[in-house]
Length: 84
Image (cartoon, rainbow, N blue to C red; front, side):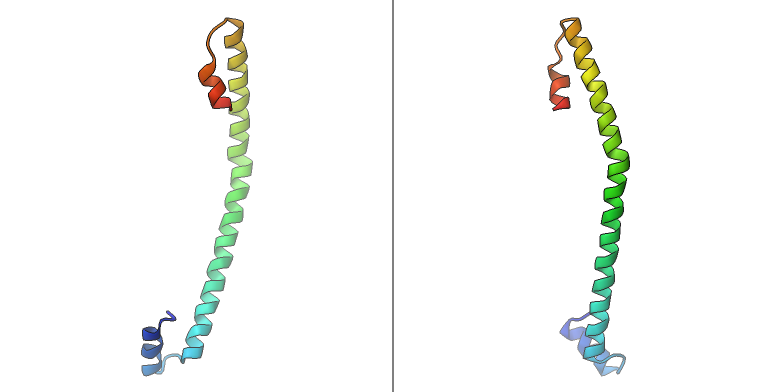
């Protein structure tokens, strides 16, 4: 949008001047950055509420399984690696 070719084209047909084109370009970049930031914050919030809770629950299940396997003298090495 702000390439020299685009500026020449817009100016040739008197659609936008170079300054107007660069101004719009900066506005679009600012909007894009704002949208990316909003999506990133929403993703972080989703992970904290859903994925973290699932990981904590699964960790508890693994810990219980390790404890039970130790009680019957079975190997729990795979479970320990997963828990770590």
